[in-house]
Length: 351
Image (cartoon, rainbow, N blue to C red):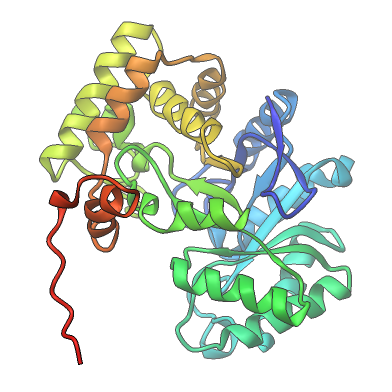
């Protein structure tokens, strides 16, 4: 296991994988029993993993409680991250959901109690609520940093324009800086390449990448059975509903045959290689439901794709960047002194 700082704006050192613990517990009706969760945590720690990611609503609080028990023996060794926004139960109601200062403070206090600690290393705003002003969110988080209850703040599942504005506001106001973002990213979900990851690289933010296996699609298992998220969790699901996704799975399976690795290891190896090529740390969040799945993720640490294999996977999974990126590409050569034939500019009327 290698280590990196979480973004260029912090000295927070994290393992190259974060252990996602949404499957720790069975409160959702699907997940790992406590003993299996303990085995996964111990194996992750033995492999050198230090970055553990949970949320107040994972398994309706059971995930936080289990994680708290697991880190208790050496709390300061681990980088512990949790989230708030959605409420810890389906009956949370309007006063216990959203990103208001009221819910932020109440949610953190409940999380600290579940986790059995007096601070968390990284506190995520789980989702934008489209109601709370970003100034209120940032000011509330800054107070919690000042109190020592959280060390770093970050935004999960926020659009790029909101993150950019938050980062600038925090800088101008002298509030706790935004340390990073959390986004879905895999060979079948690369739309973060349009704005979110370029923004993170430009601003020096860390980026935690969830669902690197595309909800299990990239393992190839759904070609044999629908058992898994499709039937159990019924969330964060990808299916072969486009020709491109089918082509991506075909390519992953072909490269797995070439390398002798499993399809899951090939898919995660591509994300790791993508991370190595970035100018700011990108950290995959692995979310195993059992020890065998965790071992598959850990096996990817030893998989090395050739340049040709990486390119094949990158090309087959690439998404159109759309406007304005494609328009910019159309004039780039002209702006840099290339052929003026590349684009016809409209005439500018002269007064």
